[in-house]
Image (cartoon, rainbow, N blue to C red; front, side):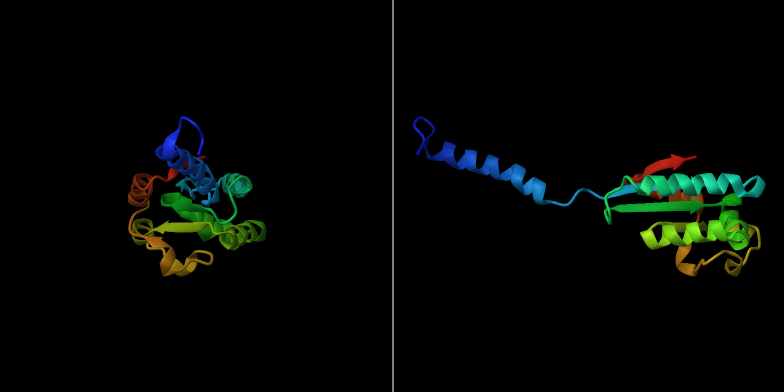
Length: 151
């Protein structure tokens, strides 16, 4: 025993020394990010291309497998999948790549209903991708600690 510390002091020192090692053994916290997409794509889908590039760049700095990244689309934002990805092979390939990396594309049901847009018009979209409300989903995700990004 170390002189002047006593048994309790030795136990406390050992416990304190173990905490940093245990903390290092834990995986990094999951990064939670939501991108808000509600704009039209612009000429030659330039806005969609830039937004997708930003998401790709963002993925390069996130810990592999330790993120939850969503793109919530409503209003004209759903045209990324309705027109952009369906008419431009490069955009389609980028959407595919992002999905394979774990990015989730979430589509507003209100936008689909009000625009009378069948889900089949959206590139590689299924019922599991539809949320009741895009704006509502954004609020819900922010309440869950997601960082909000609007480009």
